[in-house]
Image 1: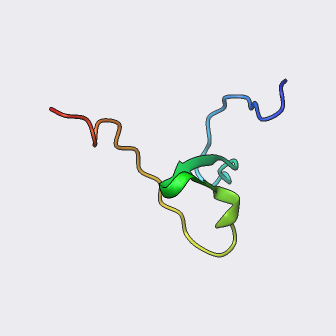
Image 2 (image 1 turned 180 degrees about the horizontal axis):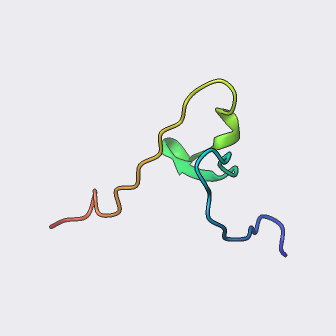
Length: 53
């Protein structure tokens, strides 16, 4: 498997979320591991939030 690639699997209640990296404001990148152990993380997807109606 190529570096950075991961298998697709289903998480079960109580499973620890795998680390991921997402683009953030100001050309930053944010990873889940930055918050692990120090904060709660709530992730929401708004797939059409910034698209014109």
